[in-house]
Amino acid sequence: MKKYVVTSNRKIEIRGLLGFKGESQTVEYDFTPWETDNGSVSSVEWIVESGQASISGESLSSGLASAVISTSESGSSLIKVTATAGSNVFVTHIRVVSKEPFVYDEDYGLYG
Image 1 (cartoon, rainbow, N blue to C red):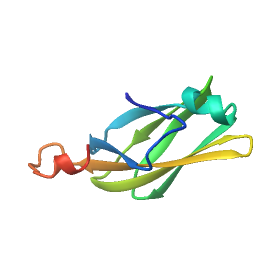
Image 2: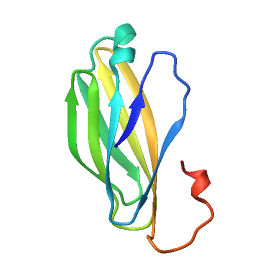
Image 3: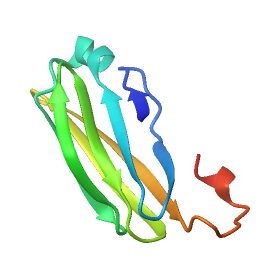
Image 4: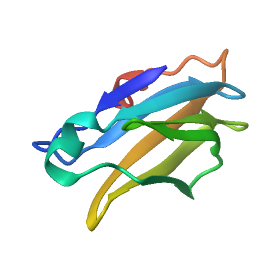
């Protein structure tokens, strides 16, 4: 499981997720520190903006949002995550890179 904590003092950045073709990984965002200044998160939307990744198993409970991200092909995907707390909105992105399991590639450091 890949976990991210969202605080009110955050840097704008795209998160990275590296996996193999056919793999599924759970991603979790902990919004509880962000909720202190912005109110309780009432909804989180996960959208595949580009690429072939898919999202399932979305859940939100007590400021913890999670989803399962799966890849069926090698390549790059971009997922947009939007959390809403009243009139406050938090937007972030996850760049998912899926590789063939037995193909040597020296660019893994670019995606971590």
